[in-house]
Length: 188
Image 1 (tube, rainbow, N blue to C red):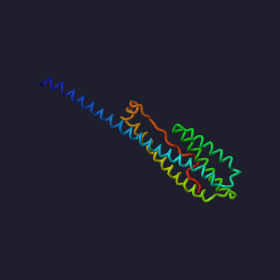
Image 2: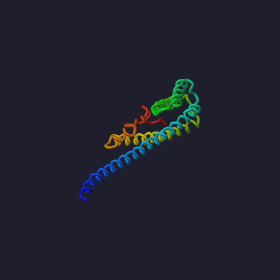
Image 3: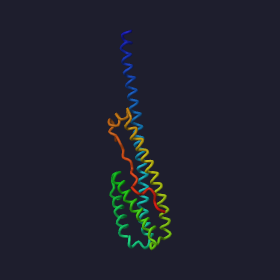
Image 4: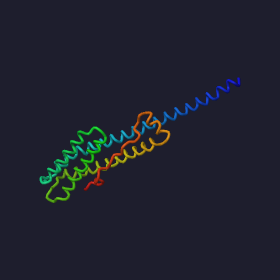
């Protein structure tokens, strides 16, 4: 009987170690999938906010009278931004389109603000107020996305998850959503 016990103890230890390792892999995998889903959800929020702003830009341009002198430049910026947005397929392309739309919107608002000959309708004021709210919501969505990416990137580099990330063919590091240059605040 001692020989059986001597054989069973090492086998039991190996089985317990395997159970612990398998449990660790499953828990790490599931939490990594949950973090990735959070990132996808925040990215969807950003896309929704971008679409709202994208739709509002044409309305703002139509609500401003007297832009003839500046219309071609602003119009071309908006056309380029809308084309980039419509053609975007990847997150990087949406990030580039986001930067173009932010620049076009910012330039339009600055031109209207700096030129007394340009008159804006009451709708313009309403649209600018709406876009200001959209930009604030977009900033919150970007922040939430970047925080989820930071958490994912941190966890993906920690042991033992760093080993599982490669084994399950998951991204080792996600990209942050950049804030467009010079668009920290929209003029009002």
